[in-house]
Image 1: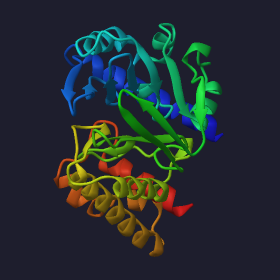
Image 2 (image 1 turned 90 degrees about the vertical axis):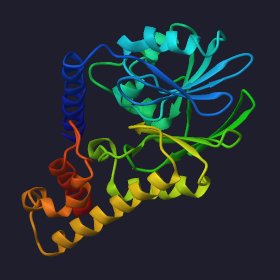
Image 3 (image 1 turned 180 degrees about the horizontal axis):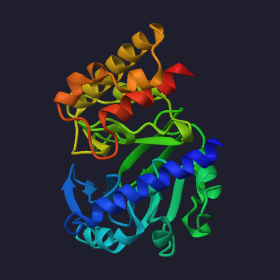
Length: 290
């Protein structure tokens, strides 16, 4: 039943983004240089990380399949070298949609074990070319383009297969969807995500970085440690508020309808098209009530 709910929910997500795309101007892939060889690409879907070097390119996430030509054109302005590796930070289609296109060009796909499991068991069936060919459990080191990239799994955060990547030489962190900068996060409970796991994931990442670290969030503009710390304080604040309501015996609908729980962040504009304040209150209730 949970698998069915998860699939239906993801379809709703994808259709929401598709409808949004039809109502907005043509997608433009924008490039932002973060260090000598690490870049952030934005377009539609999860933010992309790109690490270029003398011999190859390493890529993090790939948005939607229809955007692959534009993404490749943007990368070609950075380097004419081939893309050697792609890592998926988790299994959602706005981060893995281009997998098949890139794999057909010889790109090797890497992901956490649970990403492979969820993609391989999804309905409709994921093309075999779109599946990772290298998976890992807890952590992974990638030595490429003068970078010793630390890749680490965080348990039951946004999903059960989240990976974060830290480039110590460039001092750049890619959080995947464990950070929605200045937005309410999507915590996919049906894919193993949880409020407590999400909070622990952010704490784990904050240990690695300093005030000069540039952070590529899963969604939103380029971030820094101060913003990530504020994001953590928001999560902890909402957790405290919702737990207080649960202890008073409030129902899910009562919590979902109580705008005072999220007022501080509603006033800051954290609601967005897919995760509004009512939905984030409902998500916190469901996760913390378990």
